[in-house]
Image (cartoon, rainbow, N blue to C red; front, top):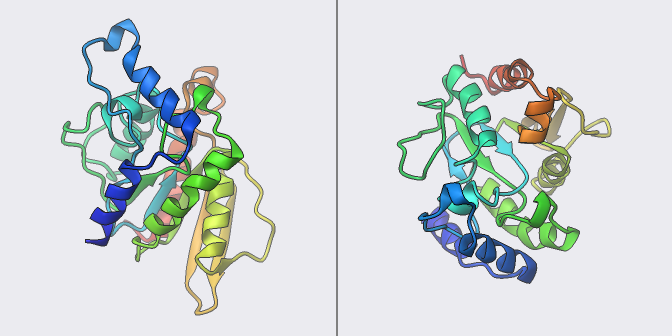
Amino acid sequence: MEADDLISRIVACRRCPRLVLYREEVAKNPPKRFRGWTYWARPLPGFGDLTGRILVVGLAPAAHGGNRTGRMFTGDSSANFLMSVLHELKLANKPTSESADDGLELRGVFLTAPVRCAPPENRPTREEVENCYPFLLEEVRLLTQLRVVVALGAIGFRASVRLLRDLGFRSDVQSKFGHGATYAFRSEDGREVFLLGSYHPSRQNTQTGRLTRQMLLKVFRRAKELAGYS
């Protein structure tokens, strides 16, 4: 299958020396709470429903989240914050995302990120984003029912705008990141995809109140409506 081949190539990638070194060093020296874990410590493919109409674009795996568990948006507070919202809206079968074998299933949603390895201080370089971009483009081409993109954070938003343009979609206005910002993109054949911006559910944003659960719920309610899900 095309998806299986893509996953194999993503997982085997070693294009970015800084990220390879960091992801492997983190695995060798975990904090006390994760001692005994065998870390994934490789790049992560996207996760979810390839027939879904909603794409969620984050930033990158967390050093002790996805880099540890081997699944996008899994094993940290950001993952559980997001999953609780998706579960309330019936887009996920459970409100937590703890491990790759926890039985979590997404319904109508696919999760991915512009960068597939955990970056130091959650700050990938421009070159690292560029190295990963072909994977993102190839992955999203598999989502033939795509109607809505929810971008979590400014980096995810910029990647999403580029992605939609490269897929043949255009917007009549300049797309600027902002929480709750919504833009319509159209292709030459009349197909429409909506881009929604949201603050990333990072601990820094959720603990300071910059992003509340109600704020994220509002974004995903809108995404669900635009996707045509009841």
